[in-house]
Length: 148
Image (cartoon, rainbow, N blue to C red; front, side, top):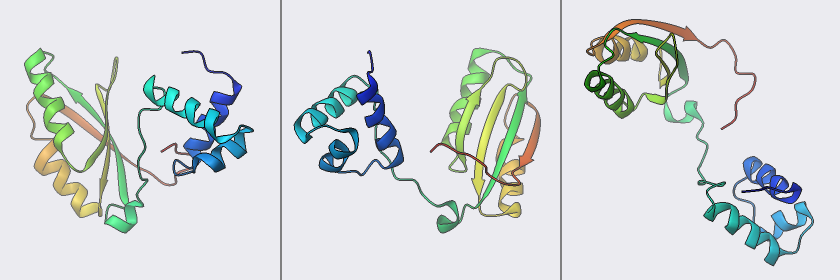
């Protein structure tokens, strides 16, 4: 799908505030409401806009410690890899899971209440999984930029 300058402006404003009314969005991008709504619907139907969500303050829900974890696995057979991915994806503490080309094999973003909760997650769930060779944890000093 080709995006013109107005489409990109619509996306910019919706990334900033997905709860904008169509009237307010139209005003910000210099359109009247009907053509603005048609463009938003087109962006949704084509999959450019894949959804809307609430951004939750981790501290407000008791998950203020965020740890970035590199995971290396020794097993590369399809079954073990799929089981690892399915299991780790099911953990509530894991808010992001990526598989990499090269090393490390996986990157996890884990959100928990505190250091004790992270230790319980690491020792009780992650390191005991079949195929896990090594983990390396990285504690964040400060978030400088994040796109939700």
